[in-house]
Image (tube, rainbow, N blue to C red; front, side, top):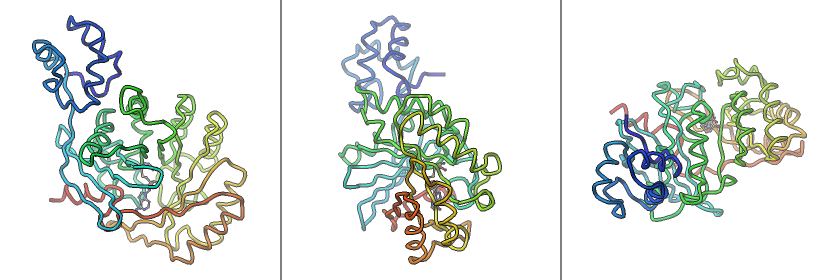
Length: 342
Ligand code: SAH
């Protein structure tokens, strides 16, 4: 199998070139060429032609092609469907915020977590993405739009902690000073709550923001929509979150999709407030985005207001997620699902 150079650090590329009889400094040279826009070894004209040919026999530069692109007429949000080397497709969303351009990227093709409200998981997991395939989602959008991305959220398709090693490598690569050089503090990783992996992440020394998809104030309600709740109780999950904040000093962001009649009453808000009271955290409320497969409805405006105000009485900061790209279905696996039906 050929080596995927875009998933490698300069030192790893150096080992490869040394094995091919070239000097070590070519490792850094190739690494930098990748981030300057080379889409293949032939674009790296500073390398001798004979070496480029040899390199092409041992390694490859993966690519992602834009298969579909939707631009919101409302707020300029751009949604991409990328086609990968094996024809699989993933979705990413580019959003313009005051604090900078944010890219929401996928970490897997499909997902095996099975959350009832989520479109990405309906057909299960196809495969995990390589670090290069996560980088390409950012790089190709930057190239297409001629704009830089300053923030990344791992909130597209897939469960990042179910693709642990590749996601960690992606984080270190995207942060590399000779690469995209995006600050880890500008990156959020969202998980449905894989407890052992949260503990591993706490030890990596990566100051990313951890978002935890909670979506319920107790185990009984959580089990109705999230199969992972059968494996870990909220108590175990919050204990891991506490260890993460103790270790990293970083505030956790809890995601809570408000689903009408399921988890959005004032009593639920009180229960959530009591649960999280005293934790170093923030609650991000997301009016659920109804998907075709399931009849979940968004909460009423007033219910959202009462819910927010109630949680805040427990001295917990909350935000209600602003909906970008509502005219282009800019969330969670819907474009890929639509595309694969064709
Ligand atoms: N697997 C990760 C990240 C992917 S989804 C996780 O579970 O966190 C990013 C966020 O969108 C998660 O909080 C997820 O629960 C939420 N989400 C998925 N489908 C949704 C929908 N239809 N409406 C609102 N939020 C949704």
